[in-house]
Amino acid sequence: MIKFFIIAAVMWVVLILGLNNAGAQTTYNNIEVKNYAKAAQVTLDTNGMVKAVYYRNDSIPTITGTVIDWTKGNILKKTIAATTTFTFSNTTMGSITIIITSTSGATVINWPGSVIWSNGSAPLQTANKTDIYTFISNGGGSFYGAVVQNY
Image (cartoon, rainbow, N blue to C red):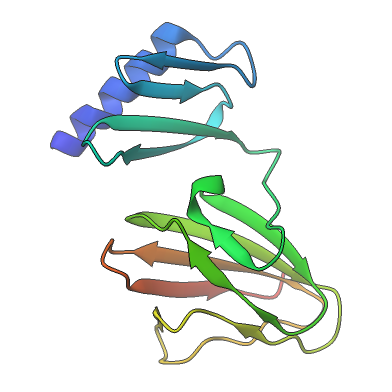
């Protein structure tokens, strides 16, 4: 019930401050609002304050290198052509979705050892296709991984 009120309060602040200036940023009573309307991620900072970060659906950030930084957004994308080993940084309790497109044949992806997969092992990336990976963090260093494949 408290989560509902927190999210409702954040959405009220977003509506009051407006979402007309794409890319603008406003801080109001320690609530940071970036005006990238359409998709929202609500998190608490280390002081327990609500922090709302908004991202545009039509501009998914690209992962540069092999470090998946959880502060870059809750949806990221990457194109790979060879075996790739990913690591996580700046992880928080919550979830992140990674859209990975393979541009070559069988491509192996190595995920952090702290990822727990439903069948006990990491899935294989679909050759020459796009697979969508989702990771859920419990905030304690473990991650639950799932994939939807063959797009």
